[in-house]
Length: 263
Image 1 (cartoon, one colour):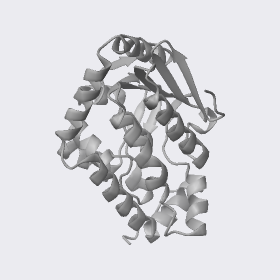
Image 2 (spheres, rainbow, N blue to C red):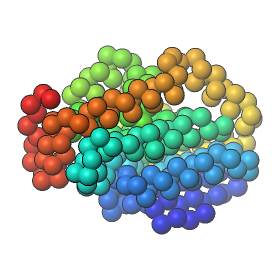
Image 3 (cartoon, rainbow, N blue to C red):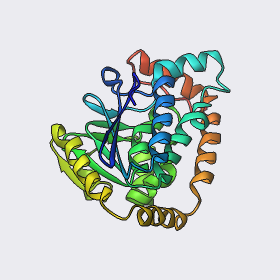
Image 4 (cartoon, rainbow, N blue to C red):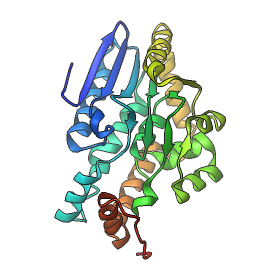
């Protein structure tokens, strides 16, 4: 399967899913989100695929929502501007988290916002040594989506998660390894190859047992993924109506610092 903005390449029991808006750092517009959701659904249902790799074309893994598109949605109707959370982000995260086979994120470069949510929804992560990561949401007056309110706490602990969310500061791939978020750092040009190698090893394993293990690990975490995604969607919709968010988005596009007023 090959779509203009998402490519799926099968190699034996491994499927490599690549986001292909490299010149836009794989910023998530409607076309990319829809294609990614469809591609992940397809490989999840394909019994010949026993492990999956998710990566991004170009210098970035994924920088999150395409803010130019989001600014247009805000201008059209702030009340529905964040409908994409329910329509796209939550389904993508469900596919990654609940897929009955291992999924590896090959984080080849910058990974922020929903991109970080996607990476943490995968089972394993291989990261480029120079990759920068971050939550980013509070910088534009929004809150978490893509399951980050659960996955980030699971990955780094509540105290560090609060710091990363409230300060919106970026962190390095070395930090990610030190905090237990990632397992291996490699040169950017080797990230995908290393992830594919790991995927092939997993594809030789007990796929059904892996699926059961993933389900048990998800079940052991409260609240449930569905409850978290629903709460995120509701909170994001409320934030989309604030003056802070509206002016932060326009400031970002104008390349100036936002001035938050608190409502």
